[in-house]
Image (tube, rainbow, N blue to C red; front, side, top):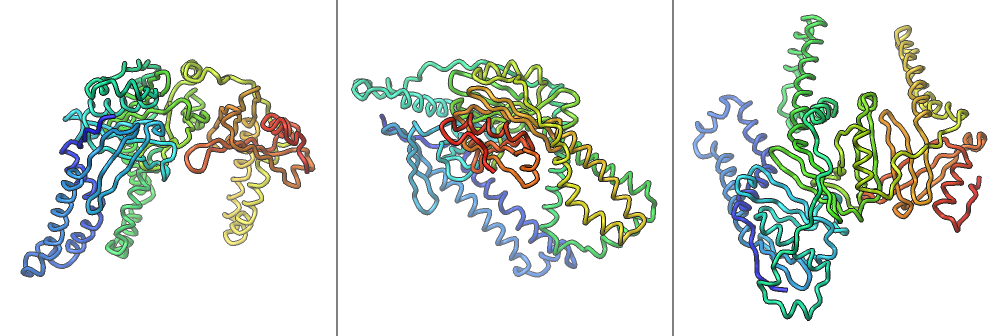
Length: 503
């Protein structure tokens, strides 16, 4: 292959600067926050001569260093193609080289941020089967043109098709970079605005917003005047329960609205496409992301429904993929953030025709129903006793939890089940949300059967099945099933092994 060097777009220098600046926002806020709370505020910094300006001088030096560092990173980052590899050379102070064989690359994920879209650029993350940390790409090209991204994909496809060396030698350099015919991607699903609004309003993102605010405030715990806040809160409580309740409601409403807006921005124009080798998921308003999922890396499919979505016939579908995550965190790949179940099944059947999507489940036996709530009640017993003793008689109101736990246990018992076919295992269970796993036999890593003393007395067993997904794997569980069902699944998984479940 040719060895022409390629560079990132110059906007990469500014993006590197912004990325470094984000990491320093918190220290900057703390430094200037301290001056805001002291006598005279920020203006006092300018009344103390050059010594008062030390924080501003240090901050300015850091900003200049970040900007220069971003420029140097951009200047020193080059990539090229050689011997069936994507080769990258980079480094701020120490020059580093990374060689990535094309046959190890699983996918190229594209992101178009607010700095990329006006210039027609993309950020490319190179995902391999052996990426180090969960959610961490093997390599990242901060900003390149769409044509350069297509060139990388073209070189990857040519390497994977193993072009004979003698044929490649006869071809000139310009012939070798001619793009291969584009694989035609078929659009299978595009989320409607109605589905997007339902997703946003039922996503439960309010907890994320409140947690983010709490974490942010915790960074300033030493600066927050808790005594003054406590006095203000106690004064506020005197206005009465109605005013307090309305205030809490307003705060929760604002957090909910923020979570709705965030969800809409993140999943705007959610689209699923497919060619012969990959599934392509595109989403986002301000930051447009395109994730490619190799079909051969899909280990299983998980369909989840919280009670509200289950009531109205909606579900979320997750792809459990080997090394499968998006972003810098272990964020699972959502094949469908929200979809009607009757619309979901035909698309899944087209994507994965080898799987059966409407199997008839074997349910848990009736005699196992009390196992689903007995242990929970056992854990709650000391709490009930303590509340009843120390807060009698109002502490006895905690016993209201007992029928709630029992009802949830019965609900879980009626949900749990499994289905077994020659090449497929389907398992369904429930916490509060209902989950159904679809797994091919060749993708199952471990089948584990456990029995407690009380389960053995009732001829029951709990079954866990694990498939590869991320670093820890994904596990489906069907608790308190018939012992014969557990033996049947073990025999299906290891036909030449021990087919009887021993005590």
